[in-house]
Image 1: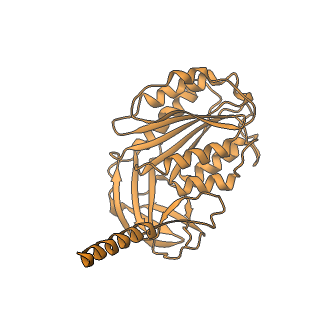
Image 2: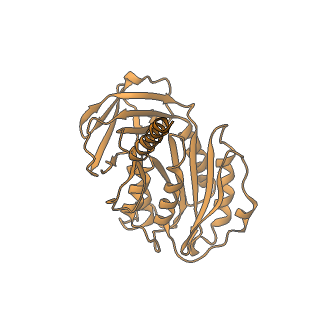
Image 3: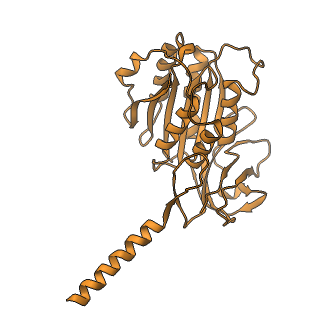
Length: 307
């Protein structure tokens, strides 16, 4: 009996150590992500939007139509899917002082997004303004806008990067392979603890595509590198999302609708990276499609995990 008890105790200890050793936290993460990582796989998820010359989504492509390169080295596609994969999205609404006369239009446009989700899709809603990022709706499949959203009031500065960090932290826990943050803002970050680099790293680690909706009043083409519009555009390009320049009205509504439609019409590809080094370095991703005259949008790369 003593020998049997000792064997069972050793077996349980072995299982516990195997489980805990398989997932570690990166103590050298410069973004302070503290994310849980798997050391048993180099699996990379890439969501790809393919459109034709008229900006229409292209369906019917097969795995053999795609090639994926990481740092110019072709990778073997391990899984492939289209359209049926549910998505998880977080809507981030800027309620800083400059948005005072735009909040009503912005929150009303949320209904266009929510009304178009399908069974299995989930969404959450946050606001960011002053020094806070506030959740108004946790992830749900219920196609309804919470009543408290109509009580939003403009306040203070713009913690844009903190909003991205908060959204990414929530989305990384989701089981869906398609994850997105839809940011509606009219200005640059003015009050975040996180930097733009930290926000980008968080989004990439969570495999999140950022869709940026710029509601600023500045003329098109007047942007400089430091404006909110240029930052949103950069984040969208890096993560495989999309940038919308919409001063308001029907253009704002259309940006919400187009984001849902795009998340529905993506190809989801995965591959096991042939680079087995856990060095924390940037790895570029390039997706190619065999058919000519098609436009491809996917995240541009990711930061490797660290041991």
